[in-house]
Image (cartoon, rainbow, N blue to C red; front, side):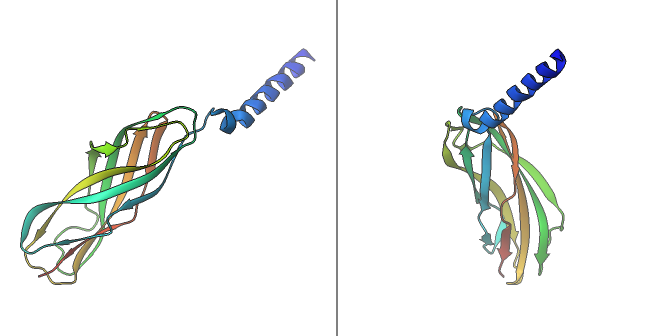
Length: 161
C-alpha cells in the first residue's frame, strides 16, 4: 500500500511540474519562425567570381524566464534547379559557418529578428536572359537552449547576356 501511495504522490508531483512548465519557465524554449533570404540577385555582365551578399533573417521568441545565448549559425545551401545556360550542377551543395550575426542574446520573454549575411559569388560570361539557378537553404542555430533547424524561402541567381 505504501508503494502505491508513494507512486501516486510522485505522479502528482510530476503532473504539477509539467503543468507549471510553461508558466514557471521550466522546459520553455526558444521558437524560431519566418526564416527569409533575399529572393533574387541578378549577376551583372561581365562578372568573374563577383562576391555578393544574400541577406537572411529569422524571427525568434524566447518564452523562457532566462536569457538565451546565440552561439553559432550554420547554413547549408543546395542548388535545387536551373534553366538556360546554367553551368552549375543541380544538387551541388555547401555548408558555411556564419560568424557575424545579431543579436547574440535574446532576453527572457524577448522577441527579436536574427539578422545575418550569407556570402555568395557569381560568374557571368554572357548567358541568355533566361538563365538562372535556384538555391535552398537550411539554417542550424545553436543556442544555450539547444539547437534549432529552420528552412527559409529559396534564392534565385539570375543572369543576363
